[in-house]
Amino acid sequence: MAILIFRILVIAVITSAAYFLPPFGIPSIYGAAAGFVVSLLIVLLEVKIRMSHFRTIWGVTVGAFCGVFSGWLIGSIYQTILKDQTAVFFKVFFLIILPYIGFLIGMRKPEWFSPTHLFYFFKEKNLGKGFKILDTSVIIDGRIADIADAYFIEGNLIVPHFVLKELQLVADSSDGVKRQRGRRGLDVLDRLQKSPQINVTISEEDFPEIKEVDSKLIELAKQMDAKIITNDFNLNKIAQLQGIQVLNINELANALKPVVLPGEKIKAFILKEGKEKDQGVAYLDDGTMVVVDNSRKMVGHTIDVTVTSVLQTTVGKMIFGRYDNDTEGR
Image (cartoon, rainbow, N blue to C red; front, side, top):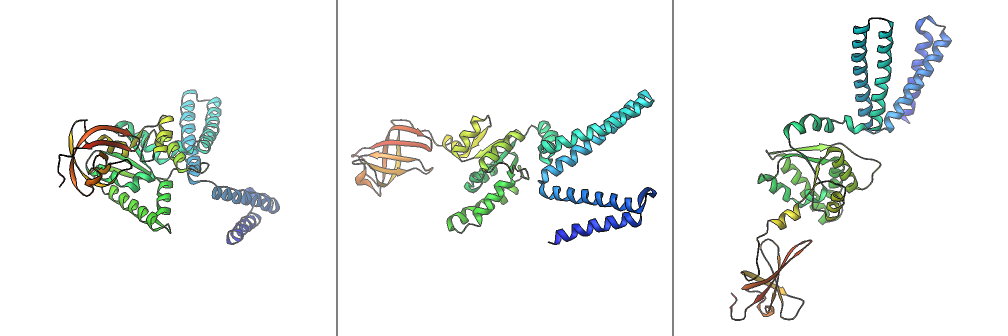
């Protein structure tokens, strides 16, 4: 209601000013009509701006400004060379057509003029440091901060605003577990921002026409020619199908697990009984599951296990072993 009253007031003031102070010496009635039309155009422009996304407004403004500058520069060159009426025509032509082209580009491709894209254009190729986009799962997981502290990752980490918004929703959840995970993710972001070897940037880029966060991440990665850091298996596969490089923390953790070969002996604490007869289940320090035959009676003991085979799965490695009865548990 308040904005409607303000718009009516703007129209009334401009129309009255044009009536009592008509421009160019025209009659007052024509001045009022011109002022009314101009005020309507201003209000329509204000409504359009309120309905538009910020990146579109930014793109249109920067595109039109670049068009004006380019048109003036090219027109001035023609005027310097030709020095006749044709040069004036070319100058006016370029001052009209190039801002128009810049306006259209800014409206249709506003991401071309975004600060993040411009920073990438001027800095990325010179420094040779690629952008890496973080998704919600890898932030909540927290291991990315340990990797950064160990200097195994550097450069520019991008946190999209829509990911930050999703993280805040998780942190404000009524579910206690989700709320704790969300707050942990915010703490991880704070820790990353304080890391000396990386630069964390909050990207304002958004894609209102796209609803899913994963799809937005893929679109942003395409736009910035960036990699995605994630723990999400489905996002990993979809991104790779579309030619986007993915850094998966889970795959990194699996690659760093100690290599165990059949025939080697390892020590394992039998935590519980297995599904099959005489089986026991143990876990190594890195979380690897060890299924041990002939160890059901050794639950609660640390024993020597002879490795029989190693199975690589999508979630990690599984080790199968055998307990020799002549080995005493401790």
